[in-house]
Image (cartoon, rainbow, N blue to C red; front, side):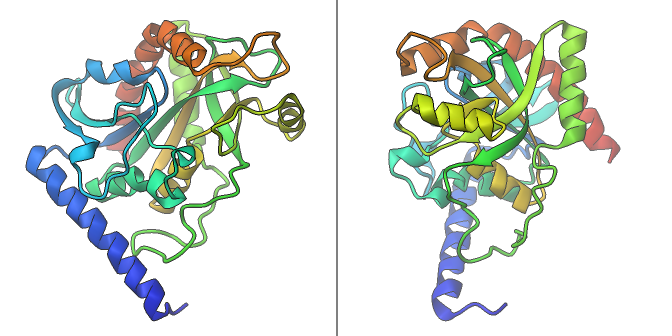
Length: 289
């Protein structure tokens, strides 16, 4: 399908912006990451486990959208986990901050340009499944996009597929691997479907009941835009949600962002142990391909 002049100009602008962002990043670090990790609310301390760290504030990177949310400081951290080159995104940007949906997923286009083969997405989420409790970790098996937005809309970039198959959006092999790691470490893991809306308001009790009837196990305000762009760039994805609260209507208590970050920080020890061991296993698989 041919692009008109406006679409071609837009494609060239996006490509130019990505190249300028990458050019700046390469002046700060020459590391080529094998695995990328996007760290959700309260989970950013995992980045402290990286060795030989180089931190780049995203505010210094040309064209990079700014994060304004507490618990999302906005830093790209390059480093190693036992000689495995990793890039941790400490502080994602959200649609509800006022960014366009393509800007929300901009970091993944940078990861793709840097050669990342596997993306680990993490988030804080409210539990919709009545068997889930705050502090549980859930391996994401699938998602429901109630944002009704897609960052792939518009001009197609040369590296991206237009008609992206989402049948195995959260790679089943890597998801099974992290479940096995959980068993080995005696870290109980849930598994379920993530329902994502735009936020910033929490869902109403009626919306939570709807999400459950649609098959959701947890609700969040992030992650899906990043996954869509990753899959369009042939990057494998594995996802983990930290269940930080009961969704509206399942608890008598009011929801707050402070509760979300507090619970996430309370489980950071088991989250870090799980992720560290999983990365070692993931790297072996990537090298075997």
